[in-house]
Image (cartoon, rainbow, N blue to C red):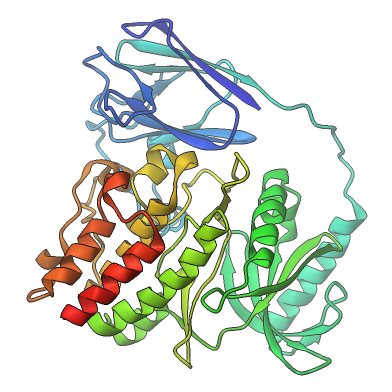
Length: 435
């Protein structure tokens, strides 16, 4: 898939921008904008974001002063009666709950669309990959439907059962659910050991992008990583139209669950958990992988106090140029997302994960996010342009050395953060000694 954007008139006439792989592109007057539209006073510094996520392209106005027009239909703009609102925990559920029309701020982009911002008009040309058309339902998909029905019956009845797709495991119960699929607790019928099995839903498994993401990211990455601070993946396979992963079952809770149950952590324990998590993250980085979704719900703490990083659904293998994420929403979770993950998605690096780890530690210690998200202000724009609130503003009498470590990890500039997990880990250990 190739996308070309050509500025047809205005101060930036003649400029062209070409994309061919999944990425996000910030348009505006700011120096941070990958696609700069200069010398146009009606263009905001952060005007709109374009996400190329083959086979779709999405445009999102970032609360620009004058709005973004697509084929003369206006999206966003600050004078709207209903201000832009983005739920930082779950965009889709927020809009459903509040009955908000997402057309107010974002839209899908098609071939020959015209985007107008300020005095600049941009023509979109899309050259899609040619794929064979097959309207018949593959037999595997019918098998997948049968197995999903069996899974639903297990959840509904509470009675364990064995699926034809995974004959050596008895499915006991549902333990987690997300956009890519569901996770079930299962027992190996040969030895009685417990495992977590992740199964991709068949409705999504027919989506080529989702299949590619699962096969080339989760399956490849998760199976290749073996470390005491990473939740292990023992097997991956595709059968009867379903992808599944046999994973280590960690008896315990993730950090978000722990906070929900007990409130925020004390500083000492929070740092000890993050130090262990950084050990696993260092191993991940040494294998040329960026996780890109470090957050409290993706760090597990077992009942034996073992810390394990999980969920490589958004992981980016640095040895491959492109990366896959799903849907029109943006990868990761806003409060833990560094600004470059929004405006320079493809080029996230090790320091991006360290920002997310620092944001996780910040939340563990304060039960607040590094940014405040004012009502009516777009969360993406907050992440891009608003300063981090120093942790000492949230906690009184915090150790200065620890303050320095957390605030450095959360620098908005990538080169001002820690550059390796080991470096951040060593700084945290030293700060604890001085505490």
